[in-house]
Length: 618
Image (cartoon, rainbow, N blue to C red; front, top):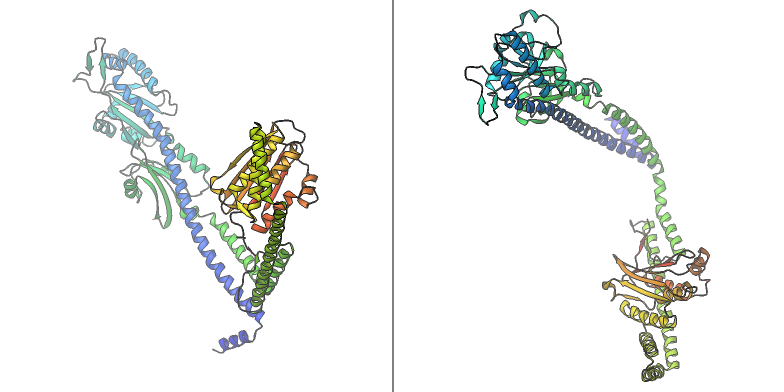
């Protein structure tokens, strides 16, 4: 208790920075340890899953390749019973005449080579009768008496004409070769396929013949070594990064066909998990075998029904996690050191509100008054930020009021100008000119005067800063018609504007200065072939317009003069100022041009005037 009380007193009297360091260190250490443990467990589970999937794919792929080989043998064996030459040789041979048997042996050897000679990995193939073993005996010889007394013959009979696969067996023991039992020879252990040959013959008259009932049906025997069956698995085991990998193939009775341990081959040694594998046919399981946790991936062969498998210890599957454990420990140490440093410099964050205000002031200095600093807390800094946001809002209101005042002044000037010019007098005069042109069959002139009158009427009657895009495009079309009449055959204009944009409010005559610039300056050196493309489309709450011409273009210096307001043309800078006032400082237009390659203008504005986005200062 005294120790705890003393520690409590020390904590109470410690400086705030020490408390912060200790608490932050303990908190970060706890979080890193928990996350490290969770990460290790998840990584182990994922790695084990990947290993199981990888081993499963290897087993399935090896089975498919082995099935293809065994299926080849099965397909060829199906052709033998209907081979006319084989039928004649078997039925015509005289078992009591050695010369007849030798001739039949040569012919049957050729027939077997025709069917099975293409597979050089096949060990030997025979056709056996009680009297003779026909086939190539260069590698091995099977005594007919021993074969017909063995379990191989009984399994061939049980197949009733189908090819029966015999799991690995000991040659000497199975075929009664007692003298060879203690010898080591190449084919001491074999995998065989046996089949009763129900030979038939179709003569030239189309009559179907089968073997006489008094003749015992011959047996096909195809022999494979265990290397032939297990080569794929042995190759994978040699190349694998797993040091304790084992593999094997067993039949459903537990007979070992192949195994990474040669001593287990040709024995009855069923794995403890065989029943579960037979039920599932394909998959992976995790079992305790001899006190070790093992991962077993298995798959059933389609050709034989045998179960192929690969098994490795879970420890081997997770061997890469040792490096992960070392890196995790190093990461933990680094993070603890970083946590101490972070705790030490945390006081710097007290100045973060001041940094936000400094950033906001810089934005205001550039003319962006649509800024807002997030308000957090009720302390002195929170009160200062709220006061700053209120001040900024008031400045923005004053700017908008000043802008509205300037608009009213312009409207008053325009109204005074309208009164001075007496628009009614101008309309009447233009109408009179229009009818004079009509009476004198001056159709072109009459259309020009009519369009000019409509343009003047539209401009003077609308005293707002904006009007519908439909009205602006109608006004622009009339302007283009007048300019087309002035510059005959010089250019033509194509418009493509989304239908839904036609009713949106836009700045008055915002496209006309760009079209005029393209006609007057862009086509100054052209006599014909000028093209102007005008497009308008929406992008969420934003709208874009493009004006593209194939005129003479501009160099970078000319573009800079236009953007800086030093060029003689004031129309384009005026449009940009109005867009920024109506929609915000981040709207306006961009110029893309080069000498001799035309000019592209991209205008960006909001969907609704006056709805300006506020910039959050972080």
